[in-house]
Image (cartoon, chains in turn green, brown):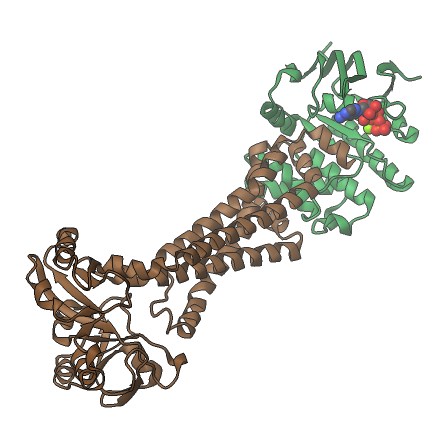
Length: 227
Length: 385
Ligand SMILES: Nc1ncnc2c1ncn2[C@@H]1O[C@H](COP(=O)(O)OP(=O)(O)OP(=O)(O)O)[C@@H](O)[C@H]1O
Ligand SMILES: [Mg+2]
């Protein structure tokens, strides 16, 4: 059998507030296979976002290792991590986090500025990504001219435009109405099923969690497979 | 170019704030340029003076006279080439507010000493052969619409009475910093009239202008001249013309210092304003910078974007200031001609404007750029999330 895409072993992390140490994650070990669609659930403050951020290389660990595709990302420097993220991870946030002055097309094109693609190729890739999320007719709209669901679809287009292996999503439906949320989940499912993207998603929403293959629950810093 | 567009859009995201910052930089750099031009105008008299000329005056003060008889003895000092007596006449044309400098001179030697006053040979001859003639600068002629042959009457303030004279010559400056607002007339006219009106005040001069052959010997020759009159009724003080002019300027040293200080304070203030604009704009967009970082943009890229925004605003203001200053200075030059005959924006001033504009752009971005580069992504999201 193939080696899992993501191997997390003995991961611990705590925050310090004054001389008080707040443990958030303690000795977490689990694997995520390539092509997996994993949902992380758990009560507020249980450390879901922290764990996701560690996996995505935007937060640091205190102890343990995270190996992604053979690379231990805990050993990478900040600038090496930046390059690694730009090649391997697509990000989807609860509040979309689009750049408000840029059009939908430009927002999607943004990550491609870090590649060696020509301007024309960048535009083609961005248009293709927008088409994949069903927004070909909204390329020139600014984020404030789009609904929440449309903005999140633009964000998804931005996350997939560089063709990353992993997509991380922190409460992607947290700010959406039920219909838009269902659209977004359908889209993520398709990315996983048709394009083989490995997805790690944090969610509160049980409907959303149902879309995943596997649900893990985080509680008091420990992880278990949810029933 | 997406990146350039992003920088441009971000710089003008708060249009009013961006425009106010640009206008602020422009106003500050224009004020700086004007103040420097005033300082330059002040010093122009000094710059225009020649190191080959000495001035001998009464050691007590500028307003005390010297005997005309000193002239012969000064001429015998080794190294002295030409000696011309002269004096501040202080005449008023119709009204005090028509002020312009007017001097009496020994015209023959005076022209030899001051080759930078350019006159046609015919006019020079006409001036020299008429005892009641005057020669005036081009700008002075323009100011009062005076022409050759006009009679001008000055009212004496130091030397009482009415002093009619005929304009026989108009000079032009050989250099841009030559003062073209002066009226000169014959010492002999003054002295012969005073002989009749107030004989005790005849035979006196304000100063002697001295041409020397070797500028490097100026100090030595000055010492020799002053030694001649030590312990006499009227002791002398001889210095280079430059030092003599500086003496005039030095009286206002405190004012000059204040103007210099203000010109730099203006720059410091606008730096604070621009830095505040950049700090606000960076703070408001911390979340966006965190997103860019997440996507893989490194700290240098983000710092570069902020720097580019800052430079865009600062240099737009600088360009505006550089465009506005010369015509504005021209306007001032017309209004202030009587006080500052030489009033123009020097290349140094323009270079300083550009340099300070650039410095403001770079420095204003420094702290926010450092903050944005240092911010940790997870923390930034927590703050905005
Ligand atoms: N920078 C920090 N300094 C101190 N404590 C922190 C910091 N970041 C997170 N924490 C704490 O770590 C714990 C886990 O936070 P995290 O955001 O991962 O929770 P979460 O499971 O995502 O919660 P939610 O569902 O509300 O988003 C919380 O108790 C939080 O207060
Ligand atoms: Mg969270």
